[in-house]
Image 1 (tube, rainbow, N blue to C red):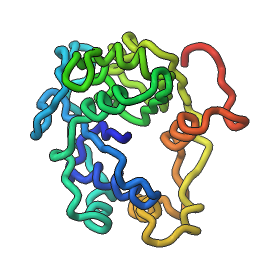
Image 2 (image 1 turned 120 degrees about the horizontal axis):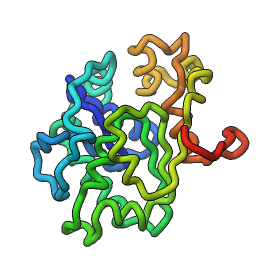
Image 3 (image 1 turned 135 degrees about the vertical axis):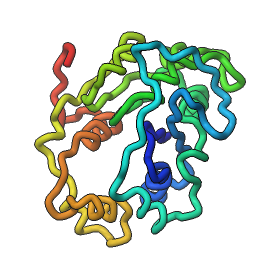
Image 4 (image 1 turned 30 degrees about the vertical axis):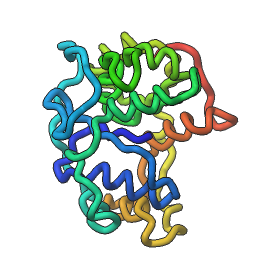
Length: 227
């Protein structure tokens, strides 16, 4: 499942996720959007406790050099971000249907959606709170280490194992290998629009995703303790 965690001024980030999922053969993966305290335009099934003062509130809209163009090129009919389901709804439905203790979550950006999950209360999807759903269903959380003060509340409540990738992605470049892929690969197009297709880009998010999906194997060294 994919949930987007920032506010894209062009409202095209979810469509970019959809384009990438479709290209790699997974067009039906549910996608959700974080809305902050203003709430979504469409009805949200999850009921949330009030956001604590030290937690996330609304994140300001950010610009992007590629999401709108990806949206228009690959799937212009896909809904704008503000028409997508709430990320917390996607999380709760996914966890409720999962086998106990099997889910690995990965965070590669801000963590508003995960905060909403642990603030969510029993509803029609599950008679468990979000925190209890996490305890029952999630095996571990992988975090790309970009924590901000707003993470304090979430991290103080999180009940499962956490693996941090620290800054391993700083020394791994991604981009030029995409030159070997078709020109209509949306990831290649995004890297090109971002200006790093030929020069490469540090791979913080990618290394965290690799670790969450494939495990450490012989690629990562896991060091006990706090980052």
